[in-house]
Length: 122
Image (cartoon, rainbow, N blue to C red; front, side, top):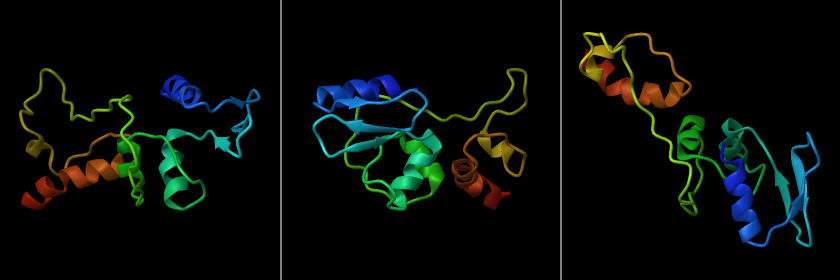
């Protein structure tokens, strides 16, 4: 989702590259830089494990990946906001009512950490 903004940022920094269709690696023009395009869910892991030097991804992905990385710069785009949802006609008025319940999510580790305080209280 952020690909176009990242490409604009790289171009603005003078980093030009050629990326062949359906390839995840691009070589930069005139610079000793290789860009690796990965699924967002893999970027933090690759950085945290030292497989790449830097990465551009959301802090939600970093938190879910449970790896240690240093945030070097806030880029000012890609605003992710995770929220807890319930049906409109529901008796759930507070997240504490969901303690111990089954919850569907794309972020199981972030969700587990968020609900831990409520699960411990129940």
